[in-house]
Image 1: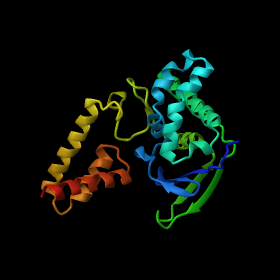
Image 2 (image 1 turned 30 degrees about the vertical axis):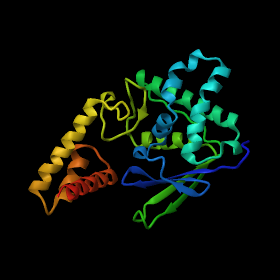
Image 3 (image 1 turned 60 degrees about the vertical axis):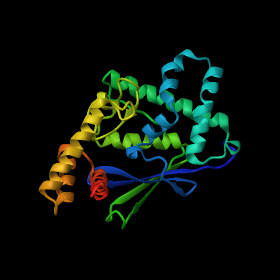
Image 4 (image 1 turned 120 degrees about the vertical axis):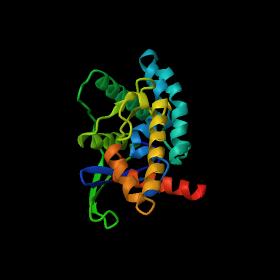
Length: 250
């Protein structure tokens, strides 16, 4: 058991066959620090820089593994605003290690074209409610003292909806996205193909803004959803970004 009881909560909205994260809580307090496209697995993997750990995991004795996970633990505490002196550091290191092992299983499954994912749902509380904010759609709140378990739950919820996950062929980052279709466009490697996709969206925004100055938002949002595979929420965010960009340039 940890020195201090810390409960993490993941709030998910299910709408029109899609899942959207509405918030993450630490002891009932919302945080906006884990936002990368609504994916906890990818946020944690990159914040803790587990790609390097994964590549050398099978080559290290236990004591070396523990030493190598000390910096990721420190970054996790900074991310979640945890006092490292009030948590069981060895317990958290074991959780980070187990999460890395789970990531290796995901990577191996993808590389071998296997369709299999497993998690242990022990000590997870699930609450259901309806939300006026989301037009009566259901909110599912998952709570646990293990932030990595919530990441796995969110990952599997995306997977169950039929969204294929991607493993970057260069850095092994595991992620879901409707915007990126191949391992050559990893947002963490900053591949040129991703930048090319960004440029194409910017150019289309310019064309639509010139053609439909009074109806730009509708036309551009529809383009992102139909042609780029954006969710409605992400399309609206990108639309606002383009509008702000044009207001600044005026």
